[in-house]
Length: 278
Image (tube, rainbow, N blue to C red; front, side, top):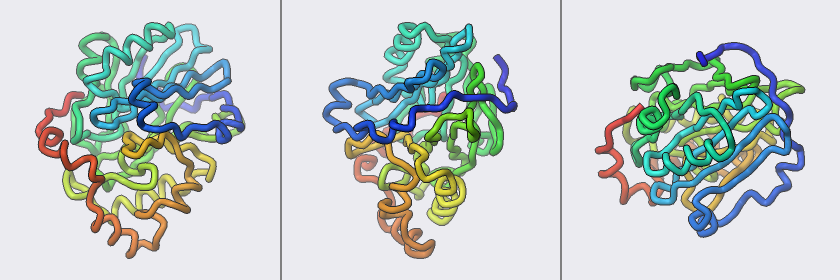
């Protein structure tokens, strides 16, 4: 199925989603190997999956109202590809896309392995990343799967090619909206900015212009978490994120001072030496 730059429709997620106890502990996540959050809609399947070694979240979305039940994975990890593909098969889905929010430094993306194990799956990454993929997307593009779609927003700063995938707007779209922010915006933090073309000022501007302008109840789903959190909202991050709630000058200073999450330090050499597989 080709990449479609068209307007599609999404059934709304239940508004009581925000009242669901999403913030489970990391110990529970590690025990489960995944955290499941499902829409009660008959149209959208959504799963949040966890890889404990790199504290990475992978996201599975699918349009189950479509005859083919097309699905996509966001930020798959090589070590959990078999788990993810088994879930896709168990749910009777047809995986068509494997998306990356950016070039990862702390783990090897599972995209290449997925393409080997599931011929026909197309890889997607931003054109600005400079990486190779079947489909290179730019800001404003839409990635369609069945009647559902994600819109692409440029959020550079952690790396030059970082993008955020956001569910669409409108009365027939998911409510609340969902933003898959990669490392641009973490829960109460953000990605490091001292390599891969990173820029603290650019990251600050990206988050404020492309993510904090979304509706306040938009659900934030990052690529990583090191403290046991699984989801946040735009409003929460605007109020409580210590690196991004200050004015621009103070915020950039805070990002530069922190540099990186402590959990990344032990993985830096291993991660930076990993070949990008897209």
